[in-house]
Image (tube, rainbow, N blue to C red; front, side):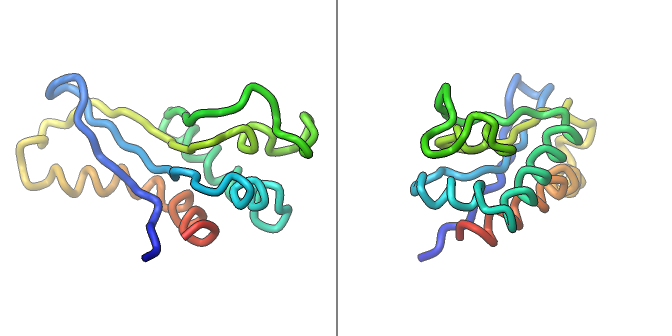
Length: 127
């Protein structure tokens, strides 16, 4: 069975905030690093991840090593991503007024749609 990278909605801070996330539990570090290092697909993923973090004012989290793993150079153009052992981009929004209405699902879908490029890249390279 192929596992798809998840996208999630979570409530936090009572009824005042709604959290969103997309990411990947990296089961095979060698495969992750090969994709990140690959100049054909690595830059696309790095750009998509960076764009999502910027657009949502979110944060890139995931367990990471202090140093870039060998044999990669510390100056690698995607050094930060090579250090990751897990990957999650998450962001929080103030809960809208419609949180108790049917339109809340559409609002959530619109928020998660921002993650579509990252999600497609993760599925294309890791599913």
